[in-house]
Length: 303
Image 1 (cartoon, rainbow, N blue to C red):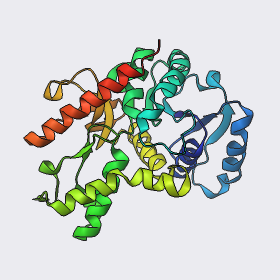
Image 2 (image 1 turned 90 degrees about the horizontal axis):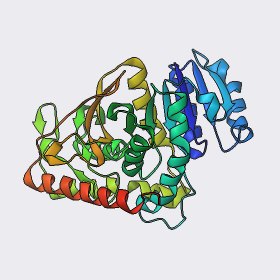
Image 3 (image 1 turned 30 degrees about the vertical axis):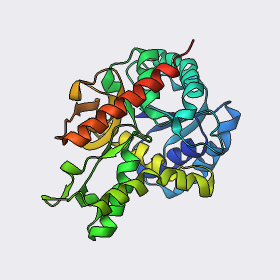
Image 4 (image 1 turned 180 degrees about the vertical axis):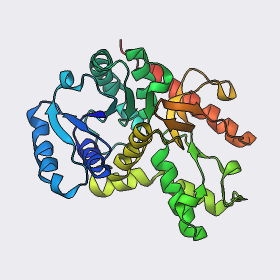
């Protein structure tokens, strides 16, 4: 299984490290701004091969070296402003970056699955599909997967239940218009009541990324683990259900934007999009989120 990571910054290098630990990748290609810029990570990972069960062949490359990839993880991005208040501030610059990178990557690996990690992820999933002509199941954004994980962890602390046993999704935009789908949240078959305290936990989860950014200047570990989880599901055909950014397939009448919905992820990429039963408030929040992303797509369209 060949995986290429494009963009070897904080997130790309963390993702490469996680993938080598998981023992699921045979060939791992790291693509930085230049071949030389990725060489340090390649050497560092090679030096640790003794300590993993199944060593991967790790190399530094250019776009040409990604040819024949089964999975491409897109982590490339313009620099993040120090005072960034919204991920949408990255839209115009990163859409242009995707316009430069995605067509060639698609030409070299027409059957690959793309895991979009760069932000604003919903906008970039849309343009990745547009720039490549790939089918919707081939492009998966990390979306609200990390947001949902943060929310579940906070709920786990309140309920004293392992976070893996809690089903609670944050859906919509990976951004300010996201919302918790409390009407279908539960644990052990018992619904989780939508209390004011739990909505406060959602607010805390939704701002957690910027809290990390404030303290360390970037977020990388959690999103790298999330991207690795998606990649592992594809490689092992695990068919796990997770909230990821995808082209909405008509849910609540929405078809023209990419947002996070629960999806079954397996060897074919997005195997199935699930349609949760949302209450009226949540339906309105989803439609609002769709409009926010739709406007961002229009505002960042290349001239």
